[in-house]
Length: 344
Image (cartoon, rainbow, N blue to C red; front, side, top):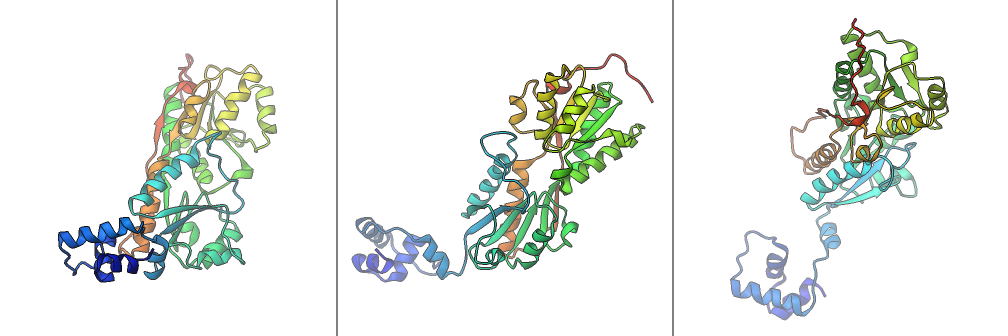
């Protein structure tokens, strides 16, 4: 059934049907009796609005593509850290609020993968956790629809794309201050060199910055590289931790430190305090539960998609970069005050 069929059944013009059923054409007045006749005709004919056809006629896509940068593993919803699920909750909330749909893209599709950034299927693109690889830079350069990048600095991409990111250094500062208040002085930072991105670099720099601020020297041995195969983590724990606390760049790594520590007789937090980064419900499932820097993932997702929609609607004066502050959720993995506090 089409709009014209409804108009014939109700004995009115298609313009009247559009006004009643689509809420369009503000200058058209329709009486209550006529409006009810139109709705009754639509029910009898089982007429439904074809959103895709309406958007096509209006030359407006109502779909936002959400994709990760190439070279980054797809996050899982059901297991491990809840990073992506929490981020997506915010994205969906922001998109649905404005009647946009969300498409999760493993990669950009098309005969040429770069075609999809400009072929009209998406009103805009929201990238997350993008690594500044040459392939990603080429895809962004080719993009002709509005784009927002979550977890990146605008300067990384020449200020050509709007970004939303948390204050990584400030969040690490909360973790360092918390550990020092617990009596720790030998504090390490753990990262994964095979999973580097802009945020990891900022967190490492934040670690150096706040250790200096508290008068604590940082040696090369204080920067721990536990690659995803975790061989170095096994060796570190087997030899006995050289530190009393570790700040990990992400919750997944922090969880592995806790899990493997028990295999080597290292008690958390008595022998080794551990802090992660993200602080989703995943942290409460660990034993002991994981103290973690609280990255506002839901807010980042919601802000990113609302910023993107405002760009699609050509709203002026949008910021090129939105910076969100972090918090710290204290749980059992640091719930131990060291009796011997070494000052200086």
